[in-house]
Amino acid sequence: MASGDFEDDAEATVTMEEYIESMDAEELEADLVLGGDEGDECTYPKGYMKRQAIFSCITCTPEGNAGVCTACCLTCHDGHELLELWTKRNFRCDCGNSKFGTLACKLLPGKDVENSENSYNHNFKGLYCSCDKPYPDPNGEEHGEMIQCCICEDWFHEEHLSLKSSDGVSSQIPRDEEGVPVYEDFICQNCSPVCSFLTLYPEKLWVAAKVDSNGSANACADTTESNQTSTATEPVQPENSTEAEKSVLRGCSEKLADSEPFPAAGCAIATGLTSCPEFEKKPLFVTKNWRNMLCKCEKCLEMYSERKVSYLLDAEDTIAEYENKAKEKRTEKLEKQEGEALDHFNNLDHVTKVELSHGIKDFKEGFRSLLESVGTSRAITPEDVEEMFSKLKNKRKRME
Image (cartoon, rainbow, N blue to C red; front, side):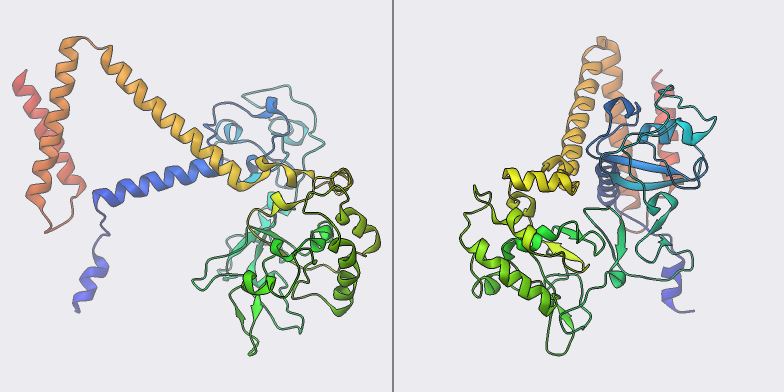
């Protein structure tokens, strides 16, 4: 038998530092997904929240037409088949309304019959992408990385994004030389017509895939190099634009050339939309801080409202802001826990403080002895830990 066979059979081991780091990382990931929500109260009274973690209960609503908050997921649907949908915008908890039949919300009964402003897609049935398949694929098929559209909030497999260059050659998600995505947000081809106004902005708003002479997709084009061939106010011509669309963009450039930096008093964006037709559906990638570049003139604000994308101007709509708030809540929670532990210790009588201090000291010495006895020859097992606590217990009995 080869020596490698023993290694394959051996139980995976980790260091104490690695274990603690792993636990911290898992807790942080959970906090980021849940937005720091402890799951103690139903979010229904907060109305249609700008962004929150939402779950779909397949047991109660198999048709996928309802979503529940974290607290209701834990309290009202414990043991049910649940789908974690990450976050959804402008959503109010459905738990216990008419869609759940006789099931009442245990945390907050008496809700409206229906939340008319909620939006649902096939994600609530556990399906994703234009291929309308579950994730992970039950057939074990690999479809590559999935990315989320910032408009419809559906998730798409990279191979199903319909990324094509102007000559029809397949392209890829724009990444740097190390394979790290270099865009901030993705807009799927179905949502691109709603955001057609973005194509009237300067090309610094865009990140485009670069296809070399061999037809293979490389990292995104260098924006510095691109800016040398276009003026600051020239509208971008996405690499996969048709000749007809490029002609339309050139026609709009005259209006943009005389405009002021965005936001502008005489904005050319809203005006350009009246003379520029809609473009064909195509996926779009936008650069970091692109929302800050959006015009906020009266005409554009009206246009955002008509297209139901006013949330693009709200910083709290972004995943980045959602996660930043989650990190702040996590820091506050940890500081509060530390303060409560210290307050509890300070409120103990003198004898209890001494006993607790001795107990901590004995544990540290016992654990140090365990580490020294094992050394690096083998991993610490559950039996080792049980033996250590048994010794500490016997020592405490002798002292009594």
